[in-house]
Image 1 (cartoon, rainbow, N blue to C red):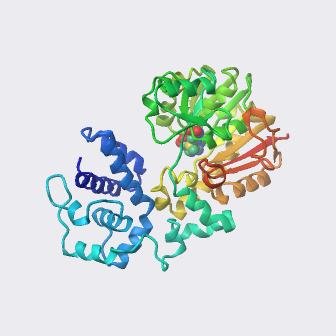
Image 2: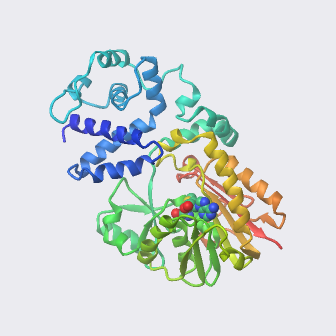
Image 3: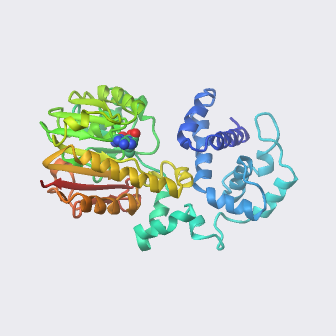
Length: 431
Ligand SMILES: C[S@@+](CC[C@H](N)C(=O)[O-])C[C@H]1O[C@@H](n2cnc3c(N)ncnc32)[C@H](O)[C@@H]1O
């Protein structure tokens, strides 16, 4: 594709995202490229790269367009990025040439926008802090409450690109053997710093098409998510409940620490998500897991009250810790979403806690960076349920490195740990 044709596709992709504002950008992009199979890998990367640049600079670009009194449209956003980022060899007039597959020629207003933006950079001293940090205005005080003086640095780290991490599946291989198998297929990885099973892929490489991946030697899982599973300390022979299992990302890791022995139940309220687990469990060679769809009024939970050694609640959350992957999510997030989620998290925690046996361990996790969903949620839970207390299992147990869990809680962030943002609290049921 020519640079102009790529630009045109980027405008179309942003339009597609705007048409379905509640659908995650990567899901829209996947459908977009599936419907346009003629777009090759290199072009796809270039188009996505441009669009993700726009998502990462959304508030900056909107600020500039507002200054220029130009309505925010996909075309105006792309044009503003071209002028402000100055990464293209061709001029805006050359790119918007109106030729075949290129975007239509610039009109008078757009030429005026180019003239207005020329020589300017993305940043401007009059931008508010929320614009500079690319977060909704309402969220900034909450982020400050969580990070204090570190907010700007933490958010800057979240504006970067996410890493691609794999978990070596010890049910089938060792980390070293998985690394070699991947290298033989041209995928270069290095050991992760914190997770004892993690392999970090150098750059963006097509891991899922490798024989090593198809054979279940590795699973795609952020290093932080691997550490959440480690904190559960699920051991061979235990009865383990993954209460919000989704497509079983953490179930898979726990089945591995259990060495396929004992029993693990993957629950969720979403049938499609649980369905997504089937293929992954099979590929990973997991034999000790069953799936259970939670339905309101279901007697399943009542019958199993107090029977599990470990209960993991990987709660639905704002996903604010995954902004590196989903820069669009920070723009979609509304205060009412957060408030609804906080209520849901408390309710799920209370329900799941009843399934744990006395002496067992309840682990609560989110991929959120907000105190409201994390420390505050746990403080309120412990107050409501005095039989539970925070506990710090000995380092090394379950594969957990030393020093990450402090007073039973672990907060990971891209800035501090090079992982997605995750929170984990480990609690013991004392009675
Ligand atoms: C953060 S995701 C889980 C991700 C998954 N554990 C993994 O590692 O891939 C949260 C999950 O909670 C589920 N969920 C939402 N409400 C729930 C409820 N009331 N009870 C149990 N699960 C719920 C959602 O369907 C979603 O799959």
